[in-house]
Length: 307
Image (cartoon, rainbow, N blue to C red; front, side):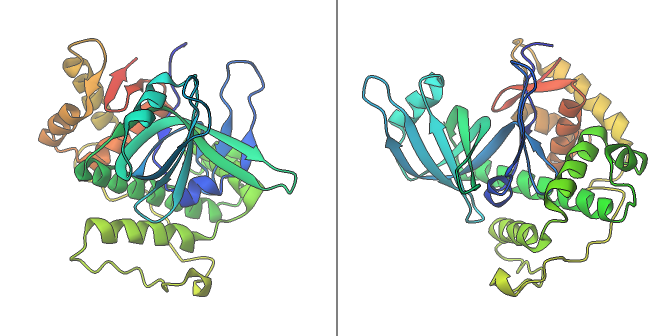
């Protein structure tokens, strides 16, 4: 179906920047993917952080913006905005740095003669956000990273690591494909790096809770692998109701809240979902699942629409 966008991955800079393997599109107008070391098949992302630098490397008549965004865990995203992203270019021209921003856009990669790959994001939209929205992204991204860690650890215990083998063991099709490719291209990831990002995120969100995963402050002293018991669920979720039931609830809410034909506002969707016992974290997981199934898409940064 034309016009349907790829899932916008919530991902920390540390995972995105190490996604050096690319699956190139075999046909025109088909998506290409950067495969992360945790098995995310990335075409589009929703990233957030502090825009620390911006530079117009074009001209006043035809600006081309470069920017650096520091995510709350300390990693850096790199963005490039050209003439084919007029809305994002207009925002970059007007925005004052430093400030909190969210960016939704496509991932691009460049590999130099020394076989080093650089990852950047070509934004469809750049939006200035408040601290609350940044913290929402931080929580969502920590949960998504944890989910991918669990799936990768589960795959480590599966003898047949082919796509079919991983599907037979209970992984979804897209997850199985991404994990299988990641294991073939990179091997098992050094999980300490991703635990460190999650720990840093939780420390920022819960400054009074003394979040400590037992990791050394200098990751050079950390073990490459950290034991993580595989579990049937991906992240802690509220009890009650099957995932299929909750997906049906969200699909119904999307229809009810789409009063103007442009999708359901995410804040209203979160409020209505919460009233039915579905947390914001669960809603994010359900939304991603529905996008994976081709049932919903994101027409805008803060909207979700049923197909």
